[in-house]
Length: 237
Image (cartoon, rainbow, N blue to C red; front, side, top):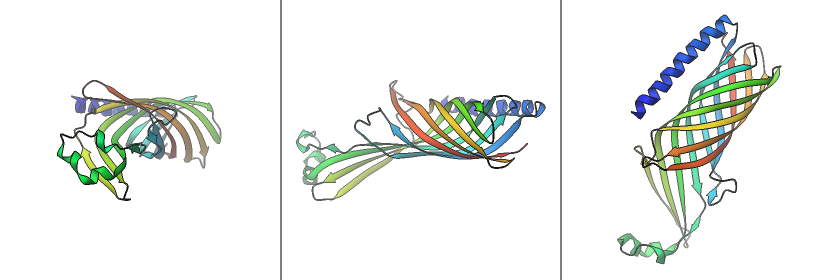
């Protein structure tokens, strides 16, 4: 059902883009094709409580429709790798479940810190409304939109730091995750764009997303994501 819904979103996006293409042609608007890379950081609260700063990224292809008025529309397909890294947590060997054989391992008594590292991989379809507040060789725009994301997989790593200096890592990949297949993230950004030539434009766009991952058992996992999107657009008409 979720796969079908994502397919409907993508097909609807293509249909809507085709309609915009035809409308822009009649209105003598402009259509740009672009590539984008967005490094960013994820945080669960503004104080980074129990969370280490770690780099996430998104990259993909974009298509943008610009008319002769103040508004435009951007969509595309991007791949995102979102990383959630915890801080090192003090480990108390004696608080472990002693009924577990692993709890009785002599090596476990040497652990002083543990750390968890989650990586979420998503395919994103951005749907963005662009409002150009300044249109010139150097332009400024305010952008509001929604990321429709298809959950691909999740990597989970556990690090154990021992008093001997030895660090061990236990990893596993989850394709059928505890999270739902479809996720949504509203976002806002301010775009600063430089027209390099009549065909080429370079764009820097600080963006803030409110990402919420839905658990299959009904709960939600919330976090904020701040990134700087770097895009290069080429006009095709």
